[in-house]
Structures are given as C-alpha cells and as structure tokens.
Length: 464
Image (cartoon, rainbow, N blue to C red; front, top):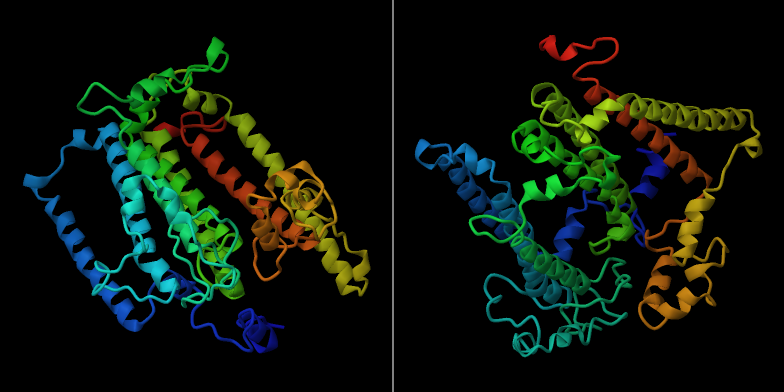
C-alpha cells in the first residue's frame, strides 16, 4: 500500500466537493493569489514585473552601501533605540498599513466581482462614502452592511459595502476568514506599531531607554539575582546573540504558521486537504532548521562573546549556574516520552499484526477534548461552558459573536477544531518526543559549550 499511487492517492489529491484530483499545486499559492485579488495571468505577470523592478532597486541599494562613501559606521548598528523605532513603525507599521490598503482597494472589491487594476485603482472608491466617514469621525459606517452569509465569492451576489468589520467566524462558501475582518486586523496592527515606533529615546530627551528598562528588570528582594543587568551591552556587542534571538523568533513564528489550517485566511484553502498537510509539514521543517540555527549561534555566543564579569548574577549567569538541573529535567522528560509513545505504538502494531485490534491501547485525549468542548464543540457531549446552551458564557455571547462561531466550530467542512481521538493523542506525544529530544540536544550543546564537568576548560581548546 503506497499513498502516492492508486485509490489512496486519488482521494488525497481530490479537494472537498470535487469529483477527482484537481490540484495544480499543493503550496497554496493559487488560493493566496485568488484571495488577494489576482484573477488572470496578466495580473500575475504585472505583479512579477513590479517585484523584479523592486528587487533591482534593492540590489543596487545593497551594493551602494558597501561603497566606502555610503558605508554605515559601527555605531549605526549599535543604536538599538533608533533601529527599534524604524523597524516597529516602518517595517511592521507602514507595511501593515500598506497591506490594509491593498486588501481594501483591490482584494475586497475583487471578491465582490469588481475588477481593480493599475488602470482604475485611483478612480474606484473602495467604499461608497469614500473618506467622508473617516474625516467626520463616523468610522462605524465602514463596518455597516457587510457581506451576507449567502455571498458568492468573486461575484456581487449577496455582497455588501463594508470594508472594516469584526464579524468573526468564516465566510460560509470559502470557509476562510472574512476579508473585511482581516483588513480591520491589519489596520489595527498598523496603528499599534506606528505608535510603538515612537516609544524609544533617540536624539531627544523623551522616550524609553532600552538600557534603563533592562537594568530596572531586577526581581524584588534579590532572591532571583541581578535580573537583566548587563544584558543590554551583552546583546548589543554580540552579533551571534542577536542572530540567535532573531532565529529563535522566526522559528517560533514558523511553528505558529500551522494556524493556517485551523483559521484559514485564504479562500477555499479549507477544502484542500493535501495543501493543508503540505503547508503544515513545510513550516514545521523550516522551524526545525531555524531553531537549530538559533541554538548554534547561542552556543557560539557563549564561547566567543560571553563575559562572566559583565553578567555576574544576571539571568544568563543563573542559567549557566543551574544548567545541570535544566538538562536533567529535559533528559527525564525525553525518556518518559520515548517509553510512553514508542511503547504503545509498538504494542498496537503487534496486536494489529496478530489480528486482535481490540487489544490496542487507545487513550482518549480528554483534556484537549475538554478544551474544545469549553470553546463550543458539542460532539463530545461534555456539556460545559460554550457547549452548554444554559451556561452563563453561552448566554453572554449569544447576541455578540456566538452564532457564527458555534456554526463554524461544529461544521465538518472546515478544519477549525478538528475532532480528535486516540490517534491524535499518540501523534501529538510522538511530536512532543521529537521536540523535547531536539531541545535536550540543543540546550545541552549550548550550555556545555564553554565547559562541562568532563571538560571544564573546553572554551580554551580552540576550534578543533
């Protein structure tokens, strides 16, 4: 039996609602393009051309800043506050605002059957009242008359005029988040980050100083050491530490990308099961590689850049001081998971092979089911919180957001809260085994990089 051939493959590559395999690609790009308003090859060609020209500009900018006349000085790279301000406001804030603009001006009109391109985007109003509600303070107008539940994506049938909403739940036909909700989300993110980009002290005497914030992060009563004292200079003077932190953040974000199938932002992604599995696997792989890089550069930091005097008693020193406890805890957790996942798998395989599947050890994930039930999933019959129609939580949410949410969460055509059972229990513990063992290896490698009981002076050995 091979899932790549025969009937199983036909089923795997058949989208929900289709009669046979229709997948052109399993990367999800078609769903993304369709959602953001691209409809034809000409649209794709224009987009590719625009990005090619943009990349040429950035290539030139990169070359320019390598020339002695335009080379930034070292102090420029150590100015943390300026960098924070620019990255928060410019990178996150303005780009999120620009994306809101694209969603409102292009994607939402396209989803309502109105084509917007380079030729008419300056003359097409995304909202019938234009900017009048914005300047008169009547912002609620932008949320009025949203798309109806009977809206057919890419047509005007059942469509509304709202551009910024807070509907919650999913578009009934595409089973993806409402485009108007996502536009609202990105606008809110933009406002927050543009404000955040004005928080740190640069040339003027106002605003936060990162050095002062970190030095003030000292736990009261002194029982937990010196807190974050000395951390600012340690991070600011170590490129490896900075790279390690950046990789750890990006790796974690890639792990979280699995939400793409529980809260699909792209139209019709929920019906494309192979693509969802491929996207999950893709992002887990990326997270795995990047997290390994984070710990590798953390280890190099501890060998090359860590100064015990400068970090006396602070959080880094304390981690090194009780590294044996950290490593041994990870060790027993990995061993426990190893025996308690491989053992049941082993047992189940053997009893299956001997023709007695009823002897399998199958454990229901009751705690996870309880969490799903408390959020409103009625299948398990737990009858508590939102899955109980008589609870205070249900009564409070009835008029606000509950009808759409309960419909979505109990609808089998989306993958918001997948029904879970003993197979999920085994698989999740197998994943936990991989994660904890990998973490054990990486943490032990980083914390023992300077020296261990076996080799106390390891940091002086050189790179051999």
